[in-house]
Image 1 (cartoon, rainbow, N blue to C red):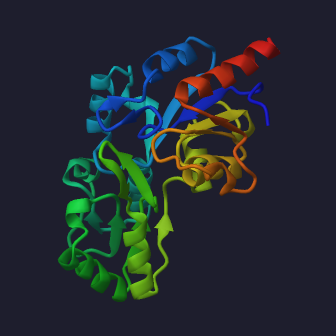
Image 2: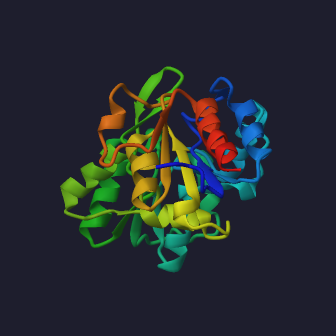
Length: 261
C-alpha cells in the first residue's frame, strides 16, 4: 500500500518519538519536516502513566512543539466512555494521570478502569478490583498493551493485569485505546480525512500498525522503542511499510507525496 493519497498522519509517541525524557534521534527535525508539508498531523498514544497536560509538558521539554489539541490519548477515550455510561470507577491509574478524571465521581464504584499503574498493581488493590468485578462491576481497560520501552529496558504494560482480572472473574474488559478501531476513528473525526487517507506511524506492530490497518489506514512500523526482531511477521496483513526510525518513516511519506505531485 502506498502513502501517496495521504491527507493526515497519526503518530505514536512513546517508543516512536521519545523514550521517557529522551528524543529518538532525529525525531524533532523529522517532525518539523512533516509539518512543513500540507499533511495534517495528530499524536495518538496509549500512554496512561501521566495526564495529557503532563505528557504535553514532557514533549515540549524534549524539544517537540506540541499543543494539547494535537494529542489524542487513550485516557481521553476512557474518560469519554466513563462519562457516557455514567460510571463511577475505581481508577487503577498512576497518580500523575488522575487529573484527567477530576470531574468523574468515584464513590461507590460500579466499574473498574485499568491503565498503567505500576505502584497499584499489588495484591491489596487488585483484590479490591477483583471483588468489585465479582459483584457485577464493569471492567474498562484503557488498553491491553503487553509491554513498553523504558530507558532501562522493556517493562510490563497493563495488559497482563487486565487479563489476570478477566481470568479470575470471568469478566470481559471493554478496551478503549489502541488497537480498537473506535479509537483510531475518534482520533481523525475532526481532521477532514477518511481512514484510507491516513497513515499511522508506530513502534507497536499490533496496537499501532495492526490496529490502524484494521481501521482502513496505512501502517508504518518503526524499529525503535518496543520493536523486536521479527515483529513485522506477527500480523496479517503485514505492515504496509517498515522503517528504521521515525525520520525514515517521514522520508517514506514525503517521498510518496513528491512522486504524486
